[in-house]
Length: 193
Image (cartoon, rainbow, N blue to C red):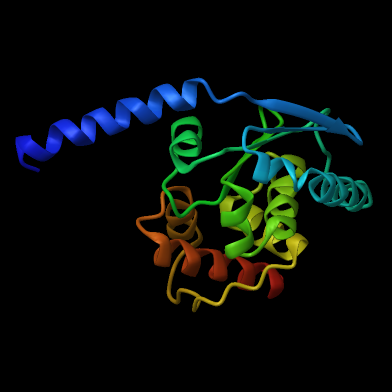
């Protein structure tokens, strides 16, 4: 990047950083869950988010293998930079569950709706909060997808070992590889592996 273009890019990044620091967060609670939003467009989805979370928690409680942490927090980030800075994940990851903090971080609801929907995203991440700690990553991802009713359109990977699949799911090299790894994990779970 030329020096003439670098200065405006840095100035824009600083402006966005200051704007994000001033973004007022609002926390709403219902059914044992807290949801934090900063954008009014995301806050409009709160009733639906609480319905999904409450129904998902009821399903979790029906499965003796699962155990949901107390008072889960869902943070719906108002923009990609906030999500990436908080989670350390690339743009193609829509949401992340952090079991030790009992927290789910998501991108904006509009983005979730374009890529599988709010319902599937929240159910998938809720399952991660409730799963046993000792599951291999591929099993955790496959079971979370099955719980959420996801059906990846990407072709599964062939001739891959569990260790290779775990590594790819932990640090995907790109969105297509990530989608194929997810499809593989779901297939393995559905096949009873």
